[in-house]
Image (tube, rainbow, N blue to C red; front, side, top):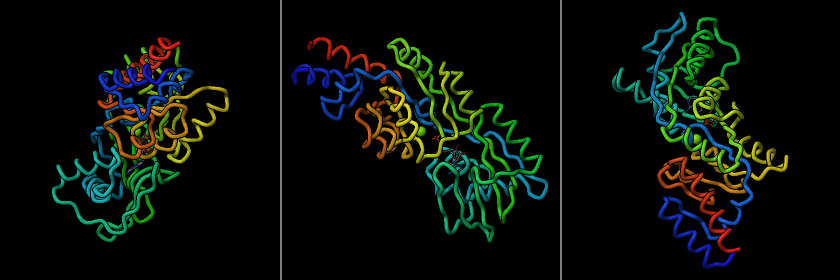
Length: 287
Ligand code: ADP
Ligand code: MG
């Protein structure tokens, strides 16, 4: 590829809303055959909203939401934002949390009003009524997190995300380019499957811890695939860096943008297909 043609490709990219780290990036997109898509914030909007609150027999819904909201106030996670906003809207000023600690891909913990509170996926066993609530939420494609305090699970919060309007079309375009889409998420399998189905993806890798996302990319590469990864989160940064081509959502975190080779400025997944099309065209005109 001549430098001039690559520079032209770079300029055209900017018009399409693609920021390219360096012209040489376009070269690596040519052989890509697999596109790994992060779920939350990439295929979905990541603007989650609280849909339901369930309390165990020894708790009440107000308290479940209040203690969870107080803790999630300190977290940036989309699930946390939904919970904190709803808790403030419904319960007013939230109590202070102390000793806040975030466990990426699992949840948060800290002390609120004298209780040791956790929110997330931190209990292996749930009382029957909470297990039922969690199953029901997940069957509806919602992310269910468990609220516990003083060593016991006390409630379940169901949070909904929405698939971006453009995601299904983006997946069709990626397939038309001969690429195999794979959905990758830390979220529950049932939720992941429902998003995958909505956008037309049949390969789903769910319940992957943040530190393991990079291993998924490496494993696919080990199978001989050339992998593009599209993501937006702090937990996607390592996978974006290891992928043959890393595409960061411009609407995402700085960590993802810094790790990516390309940035999709508007966070529209269709532009991932534009990027691959552009590089193929750029490279074929130079030959
Ligand atoms: P994703 O891959 O969808 O971006 P993460 O790896 O960030 O998801 O999180 C995976 C799961 O861990 C979430 O679906 C949620 O169940 C739990 N989780 C992570 N952070 C939090 C939090 N701050 N509060 C509650 N649950 C959380
Ligand atoms: Mg994400």
